[in-house]
Image (cartoon, rainbow, N blue to C red):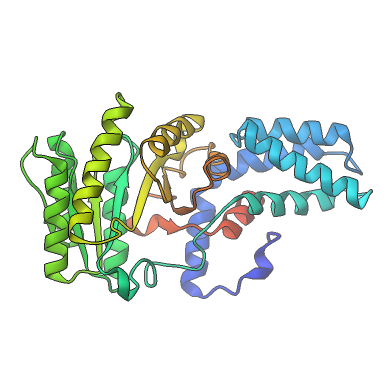
Length: 324
């Protein structure tokens, strides 16, 4: 049982989701937990050597230098205040400090997320480089929204790659939701505009719009995303309501670089971190959340459509510190 386990009274579905999370993060938690355990092994109290070992363990677990320094400083302050802390207490304090740097969406799920009456349709603009699982994430989002009673419309505004439109069309058919698309090379902003017009006419709950994933020219990326957002806003005030950045968790620190580019180019309001199953680099979730102060809303922990989970920081931390 994890440190935060006492917070939860899970129903059957939640227990199944936790089991999927445990399995999906298996490599990450084995990597993370083993490094932390070695850092404090054989020590009876938290001294400078323990903190140095802990710092090294966090950095090598892909937590990142800046985030590691923040965690260590907070632990040092607590050790200084309480005078004596043993390594058993350190384990609990570490979990608390990691949870404190994360922002989550634990108060929402696919049933309640994103559709207050004054934001219908709720418009999500999805950004991210090619290859991170952006289109797959959109498909999984659409599936889970639909499964929970929401009507969904997709917009294929990545018109620079025929494969992108084709892939989103496949997801549209697979999930059974409509899609707005045009031929390759069309103006992405015109696709976004038509998607909003169609979504309002259809009275859908959620609109999800795909965008091109190119980073070779930051100025062009900023211009393109700004134009798309203006086109969306012409038909619906204050839309898009959310700009979701999709990052590939298996790339470790490279995901941080991608986040830097996109947060510089547009106002990112949420994160979806994919491909955490099959990688030991899931510690990068901590680095990304801490550095950019943007809530992680979803994590991908498997191939099934249900395996795009609403992020809960307490469940995530519990999993990192558990080898069951």
